[in-house]
Every structure is written in structure tokens, then in C-alpha cells.
Image 1 (cartoon, rainbow, N blue to C red):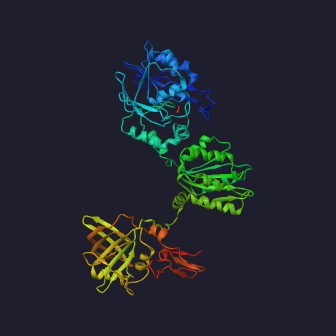
Image 2 (cartoon, protein in one colour; image 1 turned 180 degrees about the vertical axis):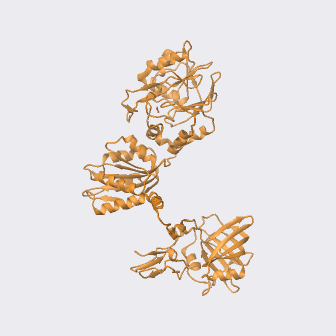
Length: 602
Ligand code: FEO
């Protein structure tokens, strides 16, 4: 099949409709193309050969392009036999041609053919071959898909010959109604998926050259706007989520686990999940399943316990994922077992080494068949894995705006000790409301609750220090400055202190920087006062991470001892309010936080 790609580059590849399994494992209902190209110039180069079953057709295609001329070079970019099987047949037809490859290429040639290559050109990364008008540069692409792989860049035609990269299942004489992505993704994940970092490395090299056409060894020649193909390769090779939604993979012996998988699909759809893909691992194409597992960022594995492990198809499926560097996923598990359910444990153990994989709770446990309890777990897992889709759906359906004060805790607050002095004693207060306003001049705003003594002191004196707590700060710092009032106690009693130029205390530990402020403007905010201040002094103490509100909650604050008390606990300091209903206007007597910071004791 002779076809022009540019004025002097021709397609001479073949279509294979006989192959039952490509590479011995992948079904290819639309066949397979083995691409090969001829560059006609002062010197003629043939790019790669084709599968062993198509020798005559391929040589005929070449002859049709060459006419009476003879090729000077056979460039071998990849030694896998679907592309290299005809090297010796080519040399029989054209014994004077030089074979171009790298050191690894020629080593593999010896292993495959056990024959001398009479004329060879061994190239290194970045070497060029001048054909006359066309200058070819060799770009090594190890492990995309074998170690000897190299791409060839024709700087004259701006053509990248990309070996297996950007390839696709399917012959070229059948139009693929699904477009390029689907079978290119199944091909990439299945065949090259393990080698994401190597593909990333070669994409970086490709970014520095101008490419108008990509000529891969399988699938269509790509031209025009190439950004889509490059973007897809970037997503796949960096293991990012390509599509929003949830993919469910199940195995089922008598239909009960399948029933749970299908019910889960309905729950996810009801929660507004944009796409729910359900696959039966025993019956659907395994390569399609593997592709979907990489495509979606959230997956659910549903399987039966079998021989004290997991059902064989699930076992195989997870092995395929692990072989391909499976990572960056949220995973839900549904296990079924009649007497000793083990599947969830085995799955968790198998996935334990994966990078950035989160197993979501709860694991759904089915004892033989679904019941009320396991259905409740299904709902909980569905809500968990689709929480952002559910929230977006609720937002779209909301009749009146919701007001959830907890939403504001998602602001990335730091925690600070504000020091001041009332003329008689030093004072300190924990706040999370410090923000920089401008950098010219350096201006900072600090909000302080009017109930805090520091508010009145700063309003009167017009100066304060902000001490930025770092993650080494122990809980005692929060007790010292947060759970008692400077009205009643001297928070620095008996301590030796360090002072900044303005005479106020700078904490001598637990902080990573401090700045001294002079109040330029006061804004009355009702419950709080906002001090807009100029920075008069500032210094970095160390580079330990700043203590955030979330870090404090997760790592510093001890779990409150609520015992058997009924009521509400302050999440900031642990104060317990006993009672059936939390007063809306409650202010924590210890840390002065409001109702939004209380949660019910359960
Ligand atoms: Fe198309 Fe890696 O061979």
C-alpha cells in the first residue's frame, strides 16, 4: 500500500487481519497495522520492516516506491519482531544496503538472526544521517518499549518517526468509529504502561523540536494539531486521572457479588457520578479493564473470597495493574465470603506497595448475599467515593443557598501567637487570622475577638508581635496562650523572655519567624476588631513548616476525653459543653471559639 506522507516520504506498511492475538495476548478485532516508510532522497532510507507474515507484500510496496532505484539504508528503530522480522529478507533483496541501528540493536540482531550484517552504521544518541535534502537525527527512547528503541527525527520534513510510541491497535484499512484515543489508550497502557518515566523523558526531548507529523510503527500517521496526542501521552505516562467517574471491576460466581456491583453503579449514578464503567473481569476484555483502571482516578474492586484468597480473575487483574506501576487512585473494596471473607485483606496487601493509593472506608462485606447491613455499607462507600460528584449535584439542585460555616475551615489557616503588653505585663494569644494585605508598603491584617484581653491592649498601645508557630510547637503552647485569659493570669510569669525592638516578647522556641507590627488602622467588625498594621521588624528563625490549623487538629491536639458525657466538644481546645442542644451563640470559655467549632459527642 504505497501512500504519500510528504512529497518524498511514502508509507509502505501492511495491514494484518489474520492475527488472533497481538503480541500473543491482545485481541485486535480491527486487525493491526505494521508501519514502514521510505524516504526518497539522494540517498534512500527505509524505516523499519514488518511482521514475518507480510514479507512479499512489504517488499512489493517498497519496490513500487523505488522504481529502478535501490535503498541505501534500512533504519531499525525497534527490534521487536513485529517490526524487525524482515531485516534479513530485506538484505537478501538489497544486499548493498547499510543497516542503521545502535549498539543494543545490533546485539539483538545477532540474537535473533545469528547472521552477520554485512554493512552496518552504528549510531549514538543525537547522531545525524544526511540523505541529501533530509537530515535524520536519532533520539534514543529506551524502554519505549524495549531498551534499544530509538526515534528518528527528520528536521527537513519536521517528521518524527516514533517507533511504538503514538501507536494504536487496528489496521489502517478499517476506519475506527471510536477515534484514536480508545485503542491508542488500550495499546499504550497494555504495552508501554509500565514505562511512564521513560515516556516522560522522551516527551521532554520531543518538546524541544518542531514536529508537524508523527509516523508511528502502528496505527495512523498523525498530523495537523498534534497537541491532543501529546497531551494524552503526557496524562498516561504520568499516571494522572484522564476521565472523571468511577470504574467498577467485579468477579462473581453465583451472581451475588455482581448484584452488589450493579447496585453500587446505581448508587454512584444517583450521586451524580459523571461516568460509571462496570466490567466483569471473567468475561470482558482484560486489556480494556486494565485501561479503564488507569483512565479513572476512582475504582471499586468487588470480588469473592476464593481458596482463602481472591477469585482468580481479580488476582490476574491486580497483577496486571501492579506490573504497570499502578498509582494515584482512590479505591473502594467490596468483598464477599460465606464462611471466612478474606478478599479485602488480600487486595489491600497486594496494593500496599502502590504509590499514592488510598483505600476508602468502609470496606463492604457481604456474607453470601446482600442484606440491610451490607447495603448500608454500599451506600456509605458510594457516598465516600463520589463525595465531590454528590456535592456538585446537590449544588446544582439546591433551591436556597446553604451556609456551612465549616466550609471556611478549608481556608489554609496558619496559627500564630500574638504578643502585646498592657504596661504591666506581657500577654500572648493564639490566633489563626493573620494575613498579608500588601507588599509595598508591607501591610498585614490581624483579626482579634473583642472578648480577648489582647484586643483591648493592642487597641490602646497600637503595637503587637506576630510569632509564626511551626510544626514543632507542642500542645502546651496552645494551653499557655489559648486556654486562659491575660486578664486573669500572667502568661509569661517566671519566664525569661527575648524582646524585639518594640519591646514586645518574641517566643524563643516553636516559631519559624516573627514580625513586629504598628497599627495603622482599626476596623470594627462587630464581634472582632481588625488591626491593619505596618511591619516594623521581621526575621526568619528557621525553616520548619508553619503550623496550620489542620496540622494542629491532626497531629498536636490530644483527642478530648469525653467519657460518657452527652453534649458537644470544642474541636479547638477540647472543652465539653454538656447538654442536648448547643446554644447557637455559645463562645468556648477556654479558647473563645464559636458554635462552628463544636461537634456533637457520639
Ligand atoms: Fe510494535 Fe514493541 O513492538
